[in-house]
Length: 188
Image 1 (cartoon, rainbow, N blue to C red):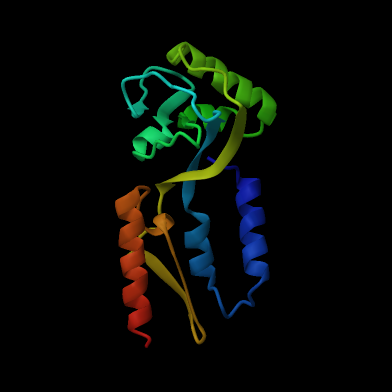
Image 2: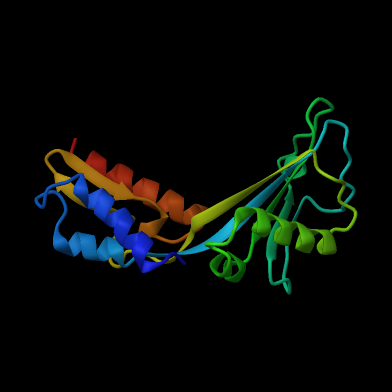
């Protein structure tokens, strides 16, 4: 989860753009109450022709303090090509993301790679690696009593939505999108 300092900064940057008639104190308070987990994503990219010999395309990992999810991305998407090399995507646990949120990215990358190697020792050496901090990964506490969106202003119409108004999964995003569409439709 991100700290209070970062949240206040993001919200002050957001509310700086609006005068007090656009977003109410109650709306601001509701938005400030949203909580997110944090984690890291690691991408490993391989040269064309590289074989990643595992019997799965994606795996949810339990019992590891660092790695939660591993995907052989092209295999998972059923896109294999002799011209394009495979890629592996790794997501860390929420606890690891929280504990290392402000750590040096190069050190975090090495920690994740070390855990990944212990889980999948047969992985070949990648051509490149990208480590991405995912500060706002999944909603742990959504805006209460909002049906997938919040109308911030009616003239002009300003509506916000997303999983922060529902829950963090694909269905939550769809629910919010449908809610946003209905809200906009009612103003047409």
